[in-house]
Image (tube, rainbow, N blue to C red; front, side):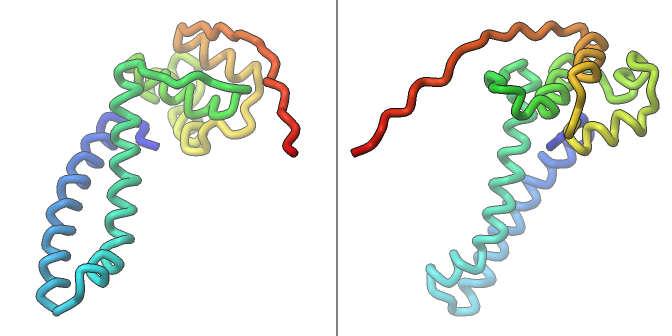
Length: 147
C-alpha cells in the first residue's frame, strides 16, 4: 500500500519505466524468434507486477479524492485509517505528533496496516484525524438452501 506522496510519485515513475521496459522486452523476445504465445508467457510476470502496481496507484489516487468503499464488519479497518490520513493530507509525522507517539510507531503501525488494533486505539487515531465513523447495523440475508 502506498502511504506517502513521495512513495506515490516513485510508483508513478516506476509504472512509466515498466511500460518502457516491457516494450523493449517484447521486441527482444520477438527478435529471438519466439511465438506470440511464448512472448506472452515470458512477459506474464512483468505484466502481472505492473498491473498490481497500477492498482496500488489507482487506489491511492481514489483515497486522495476521499472515495472510500464501505467498511464491512471492520475488515480492512487498518487500510481505512491509513487511507483517511492520506485523504486528509496528514503526514505520518503529523499524526505521530497528534497522538504523542514516535514517527517510528506510526510507520510500524501503518506497515502492518494496524493489524490487531484495539477499538480504543482505533478511536484515538480517528480522534487525531478529527473523523467520526457512523455505523449502520444490519442482518445478513438468509442463505437460500440449494436443491
